[in-house]
Length: 514
Ligand code: ATP
Image 1 (cartoon, helix red, strand yellow):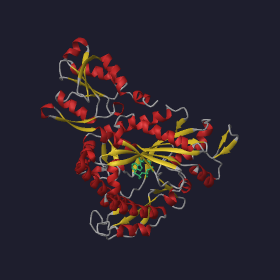
Image 2: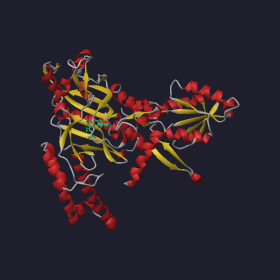
Image 3: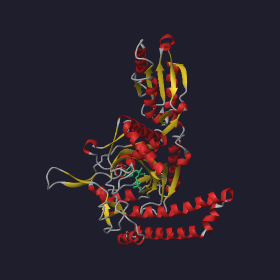
Image 4: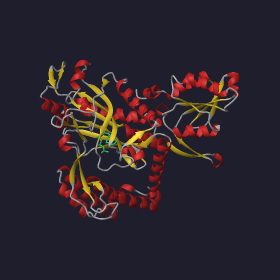
């Protein structure tokens, strides 16, 4: 475990050192859980967004995009339930003055119990070797059964307290199970309080006329309130979807794990409107379609899993998360929810406007049902970064750090490098760069030895380095070095261009989805 944590720290440090992610306002010691993307980070992020956007809007005839404002009428958040229910239960430790989410403290305790069970199983597996029957062991070993019973008891009590919004019992659970503050080590806890995660500000110039507005905590509501606009002006027929990428803001109580949980982040959301009764069919369709999108990146099929929700939000009738194996465990990257007609019906109620669809086949009007796919750009960025990072031992005791990004997502696609800074090689290299830069983000670098330049490109994940040497002046050929294998090929610039077009284009990735 400690090793994985170290790996994560190294990745975070690498992300800063190579211009991917910086802490916001760093010269003022930073702003907690807010980050800026640097020169390489912004390219990677834009490529991720483009992959999602094009997969949604270009590969589906019936999905269109919008870009709605961050500020919305305050009634939107009343209707959506965010003003009353977008809360986390928080608790403070009086000694350390640290604030925690009560539900996370209890979930961590459940996690520890599960860890104990897994340790027993691992110990027994080692002892019994090939003859070990894990499921039999789990069902019969008295110690495992005892841990399991305690875990299930705690889980059931916790689920009930959350369901009933019983803040008193949440605190009592923390006391009964002797959960201590990880910083002070004490049980000196305050009561549990609800904390609304929305940021509030004022709109309007005079104090009297000012109106409280919120920074949106999700982009989805901007889609719902534009449902009629898009449906009418685009003459859309059900089923159809509206996609949007944009910033969202949540005043997270505990912001940890780098860009995994931020206070300002970006979402890519798509709401798919369907005929009532068809929602579970389309829920299943989107569950599979979204998983295919993730797996097409080739980060490793075993790194993904679905986590189907047992406890559903009051408006949902099916929900699943796509989880990715981060260095700190399997974590949610994307949520897929069947939201029924809850949101549109609420907006109908609060706005007094009819928000319906006239179905010509059924000859009737109804409020459409909705399947939502919602993925965080920053979490997706983190999955790509974590799975790309590799420290490779080379022959001769040398080593290199390489980011093995899927080529289509790499911030820089190729680097053109003159072997030496004389004899007309820089001029020739510039000529090649000028030719390639219209199609590809293309570096030019002439400083330091060629080996050092290769390492610099490896460290930011550039898939191809193109080296210009004296032979280039004679026959126009260059060497093309592949980032992952480090193999080099002698090729004409035409061939280089052809390979680049094939290998680094988003098209090749998108074609895997059909
Ligand atoms: P979590 O349980 O981790 O708080 P959530 O279930 O509240 O997430 P949703 O409301 O379903 O998340 O949001 C959809 C997606 O937005 C998430 O899958 C995640 O990728 C992203 N996301 C949500 N909150 C944050 C955050 N604070 N920082 C970065 N990304 C986030």
